[in-house]
Length: 427
Picture (tube, helix red, strand yellow):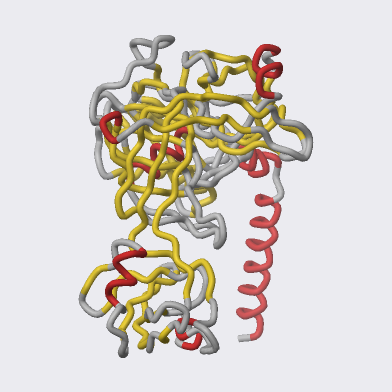
């Protein structure tokens, strides 16, 4: 009986040692050089060389995502050939050692080529918030702030009084004008809560007040990033519109983008970011409606088609796999009102497998732009980045201590946010 147990123990030790030796072998270590994710354009073909004996299995919801999947056996393993189909989607490739033990999984994303009209035009942005944003609190005469006592804090949004949606600060004042207990619905991030507040009578003017400072709108200028001629959708800014006091991403009640012109330029220098100084036109010059405000820009639909004189036929979209360090161009509009291309360089790329801001670092190299602005300035946010004949990203922020450099976001992340249509949240 003991002999049988010792035999099985020896066999287990042998198998364990063999497994450890296999795991430490050069062929398996070569798996580390294989990608965890692949991004293929429709019709593209790629090969993956697996250096251990086994077989690959492919899982996908549609055969049109991967049109061909072949394995060729060798003494050491398999070469797997994938051909992307004509349908966008995702697939998972799992390689099993000896057909049993999964040792590598590769996520495959197939994308169809998409053509967009790059922007570069200066646009005015006006946004009315959903509800009103609390930016602070104050006492009402000698009465401590009723809003603060009820638990309302800066960054909260007052979205409803009783059964009535709040559409602006003036309307809010009218809803509490009679005094008495008011039941408020408050939004805080993703959560909502209901609080009761007793407005206090202001001895200065006899009006009832909550003791809260609120904001219901914002406005500024930025740059159009892209226009989709198929859907009529647009993207701009490359980053969220946030409340200047609280930092929250402002939810859209109603918003629009408008024709604007750059009337002056404040040149950037170290420690002092510059700015494009622009002016709005009236409501008759509204270009489109803003429907979402996200960490990756503002999005909505255009009232009319948009053209870019530099690229009248549009540009194919470059995925993050297409982007590389090296020369590129940014498109923007200065005081002459014309969209122009200026030389820049992508000096750093951040490895992002999921949507994130600050995808790349951009350095302005164009002498004309440096002379005019000092580099990247406020108001240029959203300026498209073009590389190798593809639209690959948009300018988002300037480096405070070096205005010749700034951040850009992958256009892929902007399109992803536009397709979701969700409001982002600042972190």
